[in-house]
Length: 120
Image (spheres, rainbow, N blue to C red):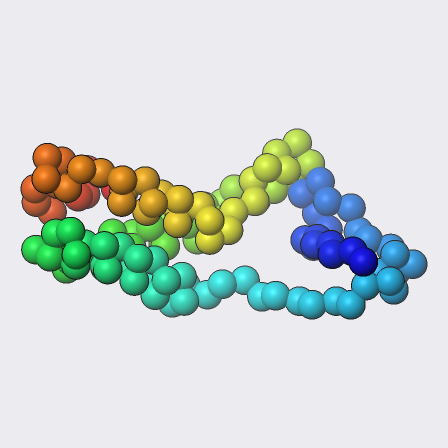
């Protein structure tokens, strides 16, 4: 038994032949829309701030909105090419950025909304 994954051809990826594809069941997944990504990331950051620093929970939505906007601009501008085939981005990239923010020492490093913005 095999499990395989592939993206659409382009950016250094070659098309897969129908002769090979006939051996697999195909499942197509669409790209994540902005509102869904915003909901996922805001629940992570908002929930963490709600527990660790409730006074900054209102700023979480602005940080997440900026992160999602930056992500979608990045995937629109930095398209993969054969030379730069590593330019593929997914939900993991902004999630890792927020994960890094969650590692901060709240007592010493996170005092107000400005410090949260600088951390972002």
